[in-house]
Amino acid sequence: MLQRIGLALVGTGLSLILMVVAVMMTDGLTPGRISPTYAALTAAGAGLALVLGLRLLERGRDQHGLS
Image 1 (cartoon, helix red, strand yellow):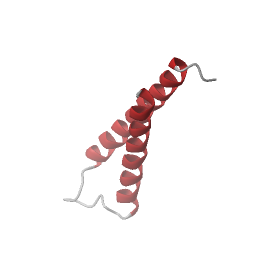
Image 2: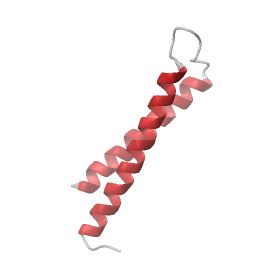
Image 3: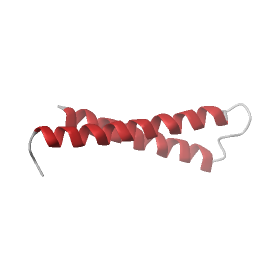
Image 4: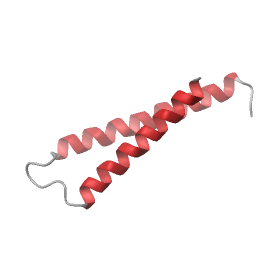
C-alpha cells in the first residue's frame, strides 16, 4: 500500500514539475497569467511530493523484505 501511494506521489511531483517547465518555456509568465511566486511554490511542492514518494517507496520495500 505504501508503494502505491509513493508511486502516485512521484508521478504527481514529476507532472507538476513538467507543467511548470512547460508554462515557463511557452512564455506563460507574462503579466496576468501566472505569477512567478506561484510557479516557485508549485515547483517546491512538486519536489516535496517527489521526496515523500521516494521515501514511501523505500519504506514499503523495507517492510516487505525485498533487497
